[in-house]
Length: 165
Image 1 (spheres, rainbow, N blue to C red):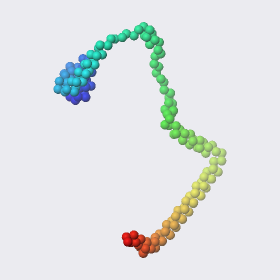
Image 2 (image 1 turned 45 degrees about the horizontal axis):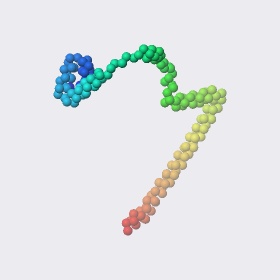
Image 3 (image 1 turned 30 degrees about the vertical axis):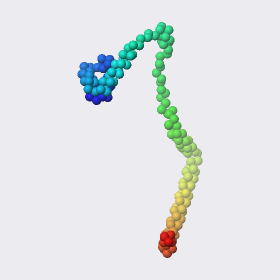
């Protein structure tokens, strides 16, 4: 039997609360294990020291005061307490902003004009992006044409050979 299992059974063993089979296992293990025997001796010594303390009965005045204490009431949790968690506040804020924007959109009496304006602005932005993409392609093409001449010029200069001297 393992020591940690026996040490868990030792308090019940000192109070004679173990079954006969467990009791014989603890006795056999403590007979062969000095560490567990030391634990058992320490528990018996503590029990002997505690037995020397007198038992104190509470006085009638203390009992009366204790009986007058209100009984612990069960705290009822609000049904919506889940929604009051601080970790959910940013989510609720984002949801409130989204709901406000959606309500402004759907309750707008001139919603069709708003839709046309949004579509027009989207297409203008898309055409600007296409122009930027074409311009970037032209820049990379012109750099590609210069790349060959830059490499030949660097080879002719051979900057690495000058540093060796």
